[in-house]
Amino acid sequence: MPSFSLRRFSEPETLKAGDPSILVAFLRPFSEYLQRRAFHLPDCATDELDYEHLSRVLLTPDESVPREMVDALYYVHELADEEGMDGLLDLIGDHQSKIEISPDATPADVAMLVWLKDPEILKRQHAKGYAFRPHRFEHFRSRTSGIAPSGDDGLLIPLQDHLDDWFEKRKRGRGCQIFTFESLERLWIVIRHGEPYKREGSIRGGKSASEYFRPEKYDVLIYEPTTGTIAVHAKGVRLIDQYLYSIGVFFFGNSGFFPLKREVTLTPLLKYGADSLSFEDFSNIDDVKLSEITNVRAGLITEVNIKKSKDIFGALAKAGKQLPAFGEYTSAALKFTAKDRSTPGTVTLRPPHIVSYSRNEDREIMEPFLRARGFMPGHPTSA
Image (spheres, rainbow, N blue to C red):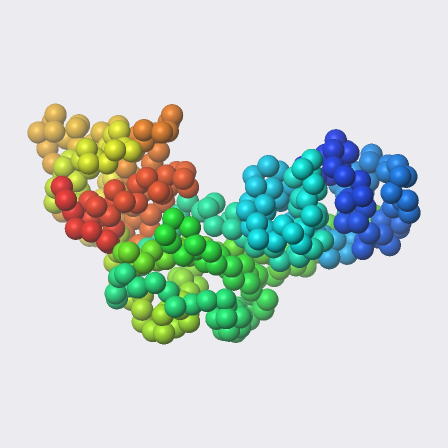
């Protein structure tokens, strides 16, 4: 079993800050393991907990720790902060009559109470947090824009079974789980699945050993109906192709709904130059400059030319030059300043599909700009 760290939840101060009765109820299913580690849960709610001892046990799990306890501790730990608590309270808004939460509950209290009532709520909120983490996406356009997906919760289990068949054949095991939610007028699809088995060295009973386990992976897909595009954060061409095929079949009834074609282009830079980066019609952007561009020229000797500057078009204009028309431009980095950001951000374009953001929150600022200028599908360039 791989090691895991409970930085927040296992600290004595954090354990003491919550309601001891909730903590005891949360740990009760694992009392047998805790007793083997010489920690005994109190039988009476008024009995004092040995928080220092409990902290040491949680920080130093041995090879006999139950898998169910690892899962419970992991999910509670991940959501035992203010942001996690706010997300859980939003998610259980319609269920608060069923989950009684006192006004003085700590984030850890809320996470444990939700886990005791329904672990799937905690897992769903945890998956939702992963949706906003990726910085790098590959973009694909559907054959028809403006179509909302026809998928619903009833399709998720058949889709999970379908993807499990693929994961199993690819030595990634079964048991994937799909979470969907809507935000910013987009459908977010988070897919949790296994990766190929991995071995790690370990110490067991004072002797060298090895642990054999399957790592967990989260992939993120974002579908935008107004442009008919889907952004995919996943590893590997075959897996991305499988996602496009499967989402097309199960959500839109069309296996070819997302054809594999070029959707990210650097053509506006070559066609319009500095005008392709005009930003005056975007009230949330103060500046956009081309800061890096890569050109590859094939031949007996392949030439790779990388230009870097705070303002490449400005530097070229002072020298009376333009971007060379020969070769293939394989990537470009745009440095931009947003009105509500204290530091500049960078978005990197790599045709045919890849867009990477230096900060994931910059996506909401720059994606409309990239579409309006023709770097991504959705709108023709207005420069």
